[in-house]
Image 1 (cartoon, rainbow, N blue to C red):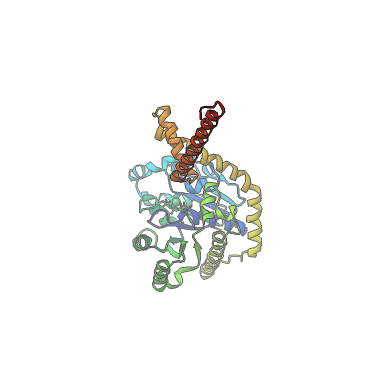
Image 2 (cartoon, rainbow, N blue to C red):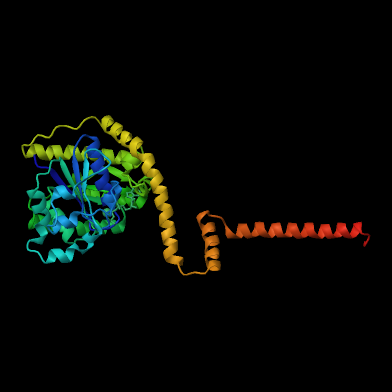
Length: 363
Ligand SMILES: Nc1ncnc2c1ncn2[C@@H]1O[C@H](COP(=O)(O)OP(=O)(O)OP(=O)(O)O)[C@@H](O)[C@H]1O
Ligand SMILES: [Mg+2]
């Protein structure tokens, strides 16, 4: 059976496309499905989030230019059932390369169509903006999911994204289905509630019932280069991603049934949580330690680039300033402590001089 291909797309950046892609992939695998993630973003965030080094030799770029076959590019991840077609930094130059090719908007369709993909789902993580790569993703997909954040600017992003999907539906891919809109990085304030109510009233059942809350665990997980569903399977964001996956599977089952294809129901949710917890126990600590090293290395690298040519005194000064900032010490409080210490020392010194003078009989 051919896999169900889903593009995760919104023209706006930083709206949780990658987080949604990787967590959906591991949750589907936790439900016993086999998944291939296609990282179409030259930033390589989903490649990294699945524990793959972004400096891999071959990636999606090589597929697009015909320099490699899928089997040569496809990599296993830490999570059984999830494989990735990784991104490499060269993907940033693909626009120019593809503009030289005929039928460049259907390159990915041809690649995926000709390969015999032995998996249940293909999830395509799209880059922001409407370039040749997202167009390729939408042209090759059966369905598209739009992550959206309930903020005014993000709402504008959704308004620009819907016509782009329509454009592809009218030309390149008549069968492309908008499987749903997913609220992500969701805040529980008045503005967010108003915007989400407005979008729900206009798009109705297209919007998933699950909403992924803003949760710091997602950021911690990204530092550890793990999807939050593995890093902290019981966190609010992970639980919401599992709810979303259940809805996703349910919608897919209905879509498949309409097309006369039977998709077996997923196992119980508890089994998926158990598998995620198992992955957490296997990879949580090892990857967590590496994350701390990565933060440290990143800080040294940043300092080297910012302060490379400074003198020792200037570096010492900046080191003190950074110490205060990083440790959130107040400079004023510190100066007061120093002042108090100086006054005490001077007082002690004067007292010593007075005692000495008394001893030698000068007063
Ligand atoms: N539920 C959440 N709670 C808190 N932070 C989140 C949540 N989801 C995502 N983030 C954070 O928001 C940032 C953007 O997320 P992500 O990289 O998934 O967005 P994106 O749409 O793929 O971005 P880009 O357009 O750059 O590809 C990341 O730092 C991520 O860790
Ligand atoms: Mg991304």
